[in-house]
Length: 606
Image (cartoon, rainbow, N blue to C red; front, side, top):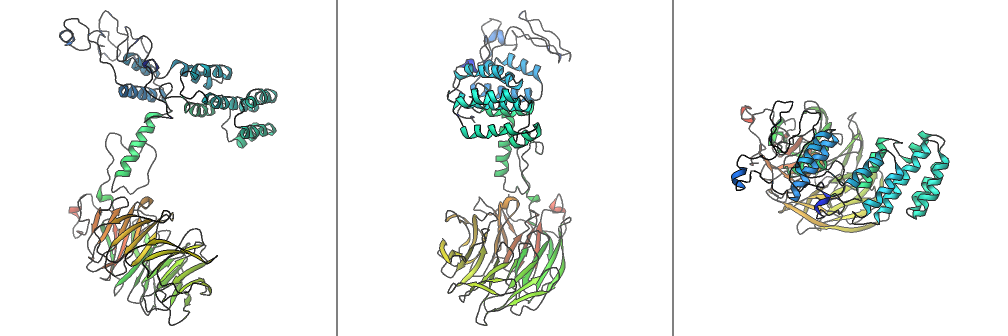
């Protein structure tokens, strides 16, 4: 990986010390305070403070005489470019840790050099705030750069720091001189110069630091400046800051991205991982083990949905009830909170308001009514029906929480307020499923023409977004509004990019006929996809992989709906025609085989 286009095919003098070739030992090694003593050319071993005899430089290998035809001296092999790079990276990291003597020894023994002498001199002058000397150093660095024009940008950054430090010290005349006689003649970034001139009006140092968003005179701001300046220098001259740490973070991040079962927040630091082993999440940490079976419904369970804050689960059933379950976030167990009754046709769809205060329930095709419940009190706020001929089977909340849209396959498509008053309607749209985008204006609706269209209720415009070849039974949208997950009749689960309007992936394994099955995004960062299936299983895929990473068994009839807890990445719910809701979580035991009576788990090999 190469920083900022700085080539590494420069002459070896850029990365090796003067007077030594790559990998050749110098004749003497200086003594250091850590107890390492020099080794001289006469070949006598000298002990260090650890009591270990240092090896003579002339005899680093017992077989050297034979190998070199009796010459008695073994010449070290020339280091490759990658070996030099690694030594420099290690040297930089040790230097950042303050192990300067160790770095000196490493560089001397390897014959490499951490950075070009001109760069070292430049670094020291910047850190010490010797701006005139640092500016003079730029002339030496110019010859080592691939883009000499970058000198102007580097000079501008130096003079900007110089100007700000003068201002902080109260040296307004000196600062004004830098602005007029040094910065302005560069004819670079005049807009920034105007901003800098405004800082002359700052009454005190705190005001200056706040307005300039600057740390103030000292090592912190100068180090940050040096990091910016380095971006203009080839890495063969000066390494990018903390380069080894950057590479290690990239490696860890890549391993996590490739981990099929990674389902926790990504920690950008290195302290939370071991660098000694490759990253790998166990399947036992993944929500594919039955934690709880909820049996309070007495008929088929058609729908389930966690609240936006993850503290509740709502389930709708053919038994005419909605049950709201409380989620104990500590032990991740659910208990019955409220039963909402009176849905004569059964409950096939549920939608939480953005603030989770209200819950809307819809019924199957022959249901013309919609119920809006106050979740906390259990009171029915609104029972809406425009006409007995209507079919209101789907609903979606506007992000403002004050409106919702509803519709069905008989051609109804309404926008209403919380009291059920009709605000707008769209004629002739046979709605299968609905979703409101975060812009507050666009409503996505799948219809009987095997498509998803975007409808704008403000200017009454509509456009085609998704076109499938088979009926779209249901769909859901990712939190960022970019991706849509479709359950397509006889085809299974399809992932679409709504922005580019392209089919991204078809997920394999699920059995999907003409039943309405609801899938979902889930897990940390919505990296996973789950769906019910007519073969009685729950399927889970990593979003990037077409093959399932888990098949959850335990239900005995069609699984109609799945819902992934939006706050607890390891909690998943599924609703089935067998009348139960299953709560899935990580393995409760280290050894799953020790768990008596808990044999519902992932049936696929990892």
